[in-house]
Length: 448
Image (cartoon, rainbow, N blue to C red):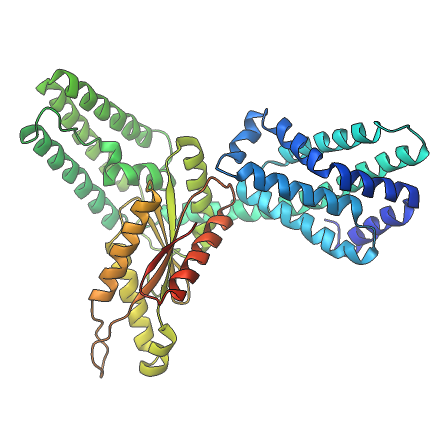
């Protein structure tokens, strides 16, 4: 890996070797054509099926075009040596983001090739002389240097993300499987009862509850894939769920009791498969926050990246809820840190009791928590947030040698907007949390 000083030296060499005429040409080209370059770049990239999936979401292309315009302008118009550290840092950050959102290095190189060709074509619009040829050569070298720094950082960041993915899979495979097994067994029984009630009591127009939309279905779709190998028994369970939902659709049209029997038989088979799958796993505990027993923050990036990928393919929304205990410092100052720990554990228990099996609850840090609500709209996420806020406010916390204590929380909610970088989602939730606090605390705010 190149050292920082070596990278700076090479970039400085490119700057010093450029003639004043070539520099002026590149500055002029950038000032006059950078928006055109950015538009052309994304026009071409949108034709690529691999690239297209990263540009979904309202306003994403417009934001990316503006970011690309600024990047082109910085690369082609920065000629002072003092600008080099900032330029290098910017390229490293691009590499970090690309690794985080899963943009492959091949896709980045393809984009750079398109950009270089566009710049060369623009330079060739003018009478070609030595200055134009030099400017074209320098533009290519500058972009290649930027790409080299990106790729170097991408490799390091990608390895770090892969390690986090592996540690999360290890955590997921070592949950308290006895508890998890009972939760999913109960979820299946709950769905069966709801189905039979709908068949017996409901009219012909009442829709039957799909198993895929139940608490068990959410758990299977969002968590089970990280606990069990995605073949063998797990694959059989997924297929059985699809068959059950298919039987229910046909039943709505044909009213055949036999189909309900087939669906319930499949449910019994799922129960048997789940029991077998859990039996194959160990019952160790790891990867949790030591105090609250919630998911550690170290797994946020892995889980958020997976949910973004699932949402991009399925089109189903999800939301992040960022929660902060109001005036928590005064609890520690007044009652001591042991009381503060009791409050944190109590809030964690309330959060865990008020989310579904498929949702994720994290200790975000200090007195902050993060909830990832899967397959919910912004309105539904706000309803969950207000339910949690009210539940926390309603309960009293026993404190030794003191009167029972009550606390409130502020919650920021952000629905996933299609941007491939999960940090944007967290930043929007954090801004919403800031607004909730500014509005007097003990309330929920939705990100714009």
